[in-house]
Amino acid sequence: MKCWVVASGGLLGFDLGLLLSAKGIEWVGTSHSELDITSESAIEAFVEKERPTHIFNMAAYTDVNRAETEGKEEAYATNRDGPIHIAHVAKKTSARFIHVSTDYVFDGKKETDYTEDDPTGAVNEYGRSKLEGERGMFAAYPAALSVRTASLYGLHKDGHVAAMVKALQTQEEAFHITDQISTPTYTPDLAEALLILSGEKGIVHFVNGGWCSRFELLQEVLSLCHTWRVPVRAKRLVPKTQREVSRGATRPVRTVLSTRKYQSIAGKVPRHWKEALAEYFSHKADVWKT
Ligand SMILES: NC(=O)c1ccc[n+]([C@@H]2O[C@H](COP(=O)([O-])OP(=O)(O)OC[C@H]3O[C@@H](n4cnc5c(N)ncnc54)[C@H](OP(=O)(O)O)[C@@H]3O)[C@@H](O)[C@H]2O)c1
Image: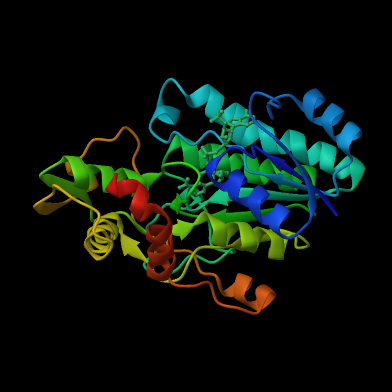
C-alpha cells in the first residue's frame, strides 16, 4: 500500500498523514502549492512518478460564504472538477480513490438521519459544487469511494470549535445558531475511518455519534472551558436563528448523517461527539490558557 494524501496540510489531511505515519504505512503528501487538483496533467504526472495504490483527496474549497460570490468559480474548479480529474487518473492506474464529501449535499429538511441512499439537494453553492464533484467522479470511476462527513474540527488548524473558544474569551455575549443541526466530528476519528473504509466503493457516511445545534455545541464548549479552567469573558450565551445572522450562504437546517453503513463495515460505533470534544480539549486547554 502506498498512499497519496492530496492537501496533506489541511485540517483533515494533516491528521490522515499523522495516522499513516503512526501505522507505518508508506505515504506521500502534497500541499496546494505543490499540486493543484484543478490541473489533470499535474495529477497525471505526479501519479506516474509516485505510483500510489490509494489516493485520498482532502483538497477542497471550503469557504462556504465566499463560494456564493467571488469564490464561486474556484469552488467549482476545486470541488467539482478536481475530483473528476483525480478519478480519471486513478482509473487509468487502477488506484483506489477515496474522496471526502459533505453533509451540505442535502437540503436539511429531513427530520430523521440521512442515509447514503437519500435524495440530495444542496442549498448553497459550496454544497452544489461538492455534489457535482461526487457525481462526476462516480461517472468517471464507479469504483471510487466518497465519504460524507460534517462539522469538522481538529488539532492542526483552528476550525469552528476554536473560533467558539476565541469568542468566549473575547466577548461578554457569545451567540450561535439554533437552526443548524449536525454532528461535530473530530478529524483524528475521521482519518481512522477513512483508512478503515479505503477498500470500499460508493458512498459511506462518517460522523461522530449523536448530534446538536451549533448553539448546543457552544454551550458544551463553555462547559469544557470551565472544566479545564480555560479563562473566558463571556457572561451570557445568546441563541440566534440563521435569519437573524447574515452569513452569506444559507446552511441546511438538519443534516444528521446515519452511520449504520459505516458501522456494518467497520464493526464498531463512532464515539459520541461529546467524548471526542473532551479529548480535543485535553490537547488544547493549555494553549488556550496562555
Ligand atoms: N471543515 C468542515 O467542517 C467540513 C465538513 C464537511 C466536509 N468537509 C470536507 O472535508 C474535506 C477536508 O476539509 P478540511 O476541513 O480539512 O478543509 P481545509 O482545512 O480547508 O483543507 C482543504 C485543503 O485543500 C487545499 N486546496 C484548496 N484548493 C486546492 C486545489 N485546487 N488543489 C489542491 N489543494 C487545494 C487547501 O489549501 P490552501 O488552504 O492552501 O488553499 C487546504 O489545505 C473537504 O473535502 C471538505 O469539503 C469539511
